[in-house]
Image (cartoon, rainbow, N blue to C red):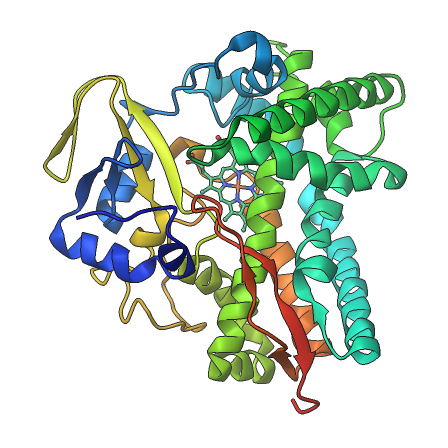
Length: 399
Ligand code: HEM
């Protein structure tokens, strides 16, 4: 019993297949993916927290052909384990903690309002317009650019780089797409080296300036390669997931109209709505770990060197943890979803992500209360990063 991650029907709605797997056991060997997969909430949580299960990165081969991509990963906080992870996380969290989230809060709200106004204007001109192109796509990339201090004139470069690089996380990527990912990584690394040099000379109130300056208790700083890798990680981690929470989330609300109406009538539900949207249709479906010692998860033994994945989308619909798990309920509380991960790699950007999704929902409910689907949304074909290409909206005029 398993699923085919390339099957369009599975991609359209993976949740029935996850439910079937979960009722047959908490961990299964998935031959197509070549890894064991944890499908219950308890087993996924154990995979993410276990100290003998790590994100063990091995260079993409041939090494000469993927130098920039490998440089980004070797130096990334997300791809390292203790003790390197602890040092990087302390430094990056310290730079992040210098008030950036609060600095950005009003700016993000204004940006979301402006983008929603543009969407509304397009709808009134053309009858319909795409949420992804006008709000969900540009918002997170603008926010990360502002966080990092990327000048406005260069921001158009970021999204294509991020989209190309992040494809490397999918299974069975063809060689030409891998080559495109490497080219994007090379261009991005060169761009960031210039930006870092500029901020070393002229520090601003941006995160890159703080990352350059931040020191550990023993005076250690991030190396230049670590700085570059951190900036790329923030763009990719901070961008792809947030785009898809907004896209998947608005789709879920419009398909469950009573929940959209409830949010319109009670904006104080905004923050519990954000958590429920992350749970209900997770933008990140799978995170993989490698065993460094024999590990038992829900009776399944993972041998050293063997891989096991936490299927976050399956954990999010576990009836042992969530009552009526297939029902979208924006009042759900508590909501112990694993959408931001767990353990030492728990999402560093969760407070910023929450602000972004809340700002987008707030702008849309105020400015487009009568939003309806103008056509069937177009879904991306990938499994690991779950999202839409396009979500065409129009307005019923009511609301
Ligand atoms: C709703 C949007 C987001 C979701 C659902 C999300 C989810 C996640 C998850 C599941 C992980 C853990 C990965 C693992 O355990 O292997 C993670 C890690 C991370 N996220 Fe997010 N994320 C979001 C937005 C952001 C944003 C906006 C930023 C930064 C501005 C960010 C930065 C990071 C970083 C740096 C890590 C690595 C932490 C570490 O390895 O210690 N994320 N995120």
